[in-house]
Image (cartoon, rainbow, N blue to C red; front, side):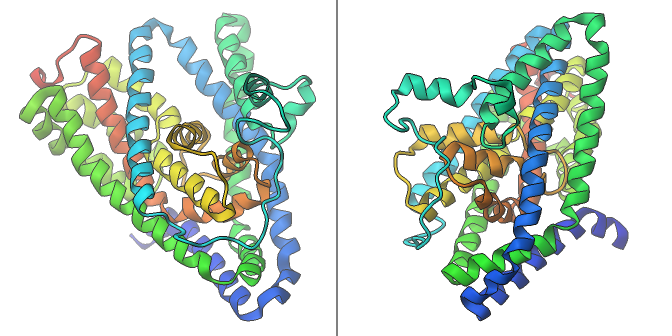
Length: 410
């Protein structure tokens, strides 16, 4: 039992401990704590290098699987619709809460943002159309290898995965490369994360030494907001989804079978680890086997409502931290949904979403380390929502494909 607990939460606890010690040292030492900043920068540079292959292999392999399985096209089509609607609902709900409860309150940093020139709707006098072109594409392949160009990389990776599937038998070697490449880069990510507690502790010693300890209150508010939204989504929103789908019977069936996957999500802190139990629970709810075995695995990769909520909080936190303007509900929720696509289905999940968020907002990518603390704090409840919401999504896709889940209860 002890080893299981450490395997699930050891990395998260060590990361929080390292950041806490670093923040405390920074508060006590003040600006002189910047002497350890290079250690944090070393870790960040390694993560910036790794995030490009992580995004490429993750998006390309996901699009390959979706295109390859076109024989269940109606399932995939309805899955995308359901995933998007549920993500928008979760994102908008979080944004509304933040409108009344900003995680940073009246806090404003004394450090001006280092802009990378890729955020916002109008940059350097360009029109909106030109800015959109620059956001989604680049004019040279080599530019895709920059961590500041992640959105064009996502677009390219998506087309690459689709083309690999359309190539059929000739594309099989490339498909195997995508699968094995994803496994390799995630292992590299795991290795780097072992150094995260010390390296990010040094980063936060420097940050806290510059701005003081006010940021700690922002983290606490962010966690409380996430927990509040989690309670609403997990209990109220998901119940409402099932009630609309099939009334009291559907609600009863859902709450009879969701505790298993939910407990697995909390205990493992990994969405991927919940796939078998989520599929089993979906089948017991009466969901068609083909639907359950398609929607759940795909959802683990591209539908993460918990990560969307965390994304909204990351963006609101950043906007408030730097006093940015021009970001309303549409922009914040849209960016949060896009960043959720690159969150790894593993504990902590890496820094890809944080770096991508900085890229969208035009903030120096080094701020991703600050946002990683938010992701770490909310990792457990986020995994819970990522898991439970996919079961709800499977039930809806089952109905939209012409089946009645509530009539097939086991």
